[in-house]
Length: 354
Image 1: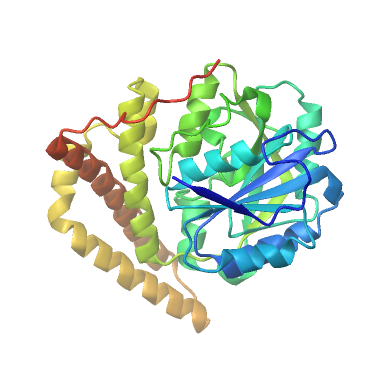
Image 2 (image 1 turned 45 degrees about the horizontal axis):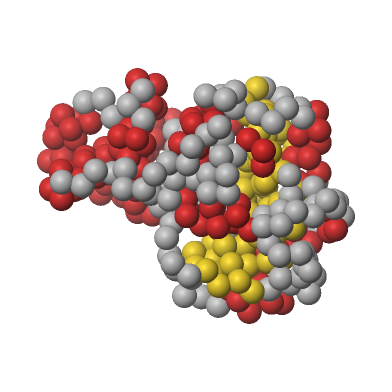
């Protein structure tokens, strides 16, 4: 599995240590060149001096020309890029961790633009909590262009399928389930070596699964409301259904790797097969209903037509039904596929946590 490196600005090989660096930003990307450009622009505006941070981009097999974009911004930023075949988030994050050099690692998404103080805020919290087991969760807003979209508001503020910031307060100390990929940072010394993420997780759970393993050694997550990024990309209903189905598959794998009751509850595994069998005959209808109501809600927003409480309740119920059913479908599909092939999901060893 060859990894190609390009775009380095440093005389120190990636993966070495540089005492001047305070934080490494690790960004995994796949076919989002224009969004990545805006992320780089945000990193150009950081209040932290550029001599004190580095950016490690892991191109996870994009067909778009990420290389040309990196080479342009490499003249302006301490930027390094590694290109690998498409292997998913877990493997891509491992590549980024291996290449990084700073004592603090910040995992960023390729569609979130950082506020100017993002890096300083993460470092400030780590300085306030120097213990190696303390990680930091930042805050992600929705860009105004997508914040009024009914589905985006639902998945962040109501159903909390994407974010659930309304449940926590600034400065709160949280457990491992808040070690969210794309907006969290941690100290390198708590990680179990240069390959901490389980590469079996292509999308979803790679962050919480690592957090769970680290929790045995005291991992806690401090929420910093001022460590802000802004999400640029809206998701359609069909995209979010696919996302939750994929999340369901990862939840099933997580539950097989760790049979602890708390993981079974978090992953929603209990009675998944029987619940899916009840929903399966109605699945397509549920998705179609959510699709139609979502289109009606978008039209009302576009033409300035108020949504009354009855319509909003119906819309939200349709979203819940569709996304919960899609996640159940993913859980059961993963289980059935594993049984058909007689494959044990633990085909690669987990990194040990010392």
